[in-house]
Image (cartoon, rainbow, N blue to C red; front, side, top):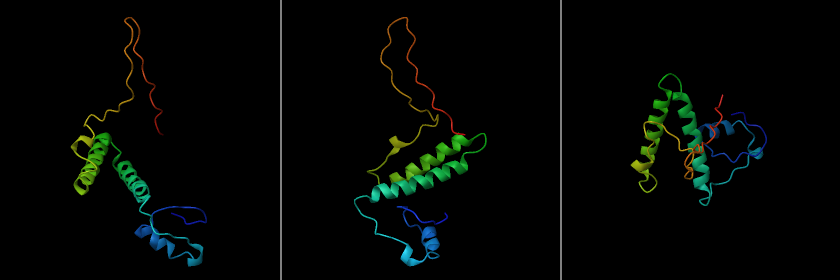
Length: 122
């Protein structure tokens, strides 16, 4: 990360802490992580790590299977660390299905409502 002037609100990790030593101390504004918003800051950090890891395994023919397995490994680690936060019901199914929506009952003779497909990332 290139450290330029601006607002960050990033968790200071070991890497960022090392990078901050190259910046004049009077230019750096730090505060202690507040318990009131720690879950938001820490979950944002963990989400970044998870996205990075899922991206790294997301190549090749078996990319989806690898990503699902990794997602379940992460979910299992969370369940092991804090059982009140997750359990086996939070694991992704092997099929990797997404629920796009639930439609209302359609009258006889009409086509069921379909949900538009989300655009794919490039």
